Amino acid sequence: MFCTGIENSVPTIAGGRVRIDEMESCGHYERWQEDFSLVSELGIQFLRYGPPIHKTFIGSERYDWTFADLTFAELKRRNIVPIVDLCHFGLPDWLGNFQNPDFPAEFAKYARAFAERYSWCQLYTPVNEMYICAMFSARYGWWNEQMTSDLAFVTALKHIVRANVLAMRCILEVRPDAIFVQSESSEYFHAENPAAIEAAEHLNAMRFLSLDLNYGRRVDSAMYEFLLDNGMTREEYNFFPDNHLKQHCIMGNDYYVTNEHRVAADGSTGPAGEVFGYDGITRQYHHRYHLPVMHTETNIAQGPRGTEAVEWLWKEWSNVLRVRNDGVPIVGFTWFSLTDQTDWDTALRERNNNVNAVGLFDLDRKIRPVGEAYKQLIAEWRHVLPTQSVCLTVPVVMPVRAEGQHAKDQLARARELNDYAASLRPSKGNEHG
Image 1 (tube, rainbow, N blue to C red):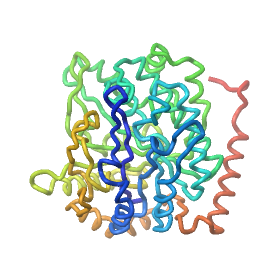
Image 2: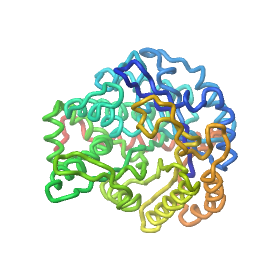
Image 3: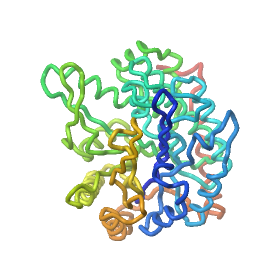
């Protein structure tokens, strides 16, 4: 699945008084038809995309679908498969921030309402980059609640992952063959000297927390103590292993040159650059979760030579091929995003309106060299990879076939399998461990 994305990030800064809306700053609200045309022009059939949550989710069980109705109808008409991104780094004002314990249940209702209204949508990322969202909001103090403690981080994390799990449950009740792509940042922390080893090991354990909880994997003992020491109760923790939704998931992992970090003896971190790379780090995540993989985000700025982004594209694609050829079931690749972004250079924690040249197109919708290169890559590889292994073709129902008999048969089969799997799970009183 060759993919790109249109980012719907909406974190708040300045104590919640200022919202950073990437769709607004990149002109998507006015140029959405043109943007979808650019997706088709590149030969891309998969798009990471979702409605802006703060404009759509206007109250408890209250929704304004005006913009979503327009945009999703056009995606369906163009036969573009959305990987529906329902929550990207921010919440509507009425929900506040990720410290709010009401968020998971309210978000699950939103996810169900979306799935019911747009029943032809099959692929979802309910909450984008859960680990990064919790870190930047509640440990680094950059977004939303702007807090800087382990207690705030664990609170945000447990609410975010619970929201994601509850949303998956609700969507599956509407669309039994739904597939969830967990777009999550793949991180690694390198100790820069022996005195930093302990701090690096702690951070390398923390990076797995969101996916461990989401996939129901028992966390390591040190992380279990960390969670309980910082406000998670045993009952809250046991909610996660009690869910069995992993079989509906593709592990999406994002990789940028900023994903690897050097750790000092005092626990502070700095950039390490590309040390292991996508190949090495993806192996670590796949070894832990044993799921199909999709490379869900990457980019780099075009740079002064004008070739930096093209070179990075080919490097990342080479990494994807290496991962696949070595036996990891990798099913997709994404250059993120379609157009340039604004204020990525400050991780959206300041509103400077700086344009970052990381898109396939610039903000005037003129194609960049990396856009031309990606278009060529797709044309050359789109028919080669499926013939290497038809078993790695994801069972996606294309939008134009959503009402056909094959789609109905697949839904019925998925419902039958889901019901059978549910019947095998032990009752609450008979569970062990």
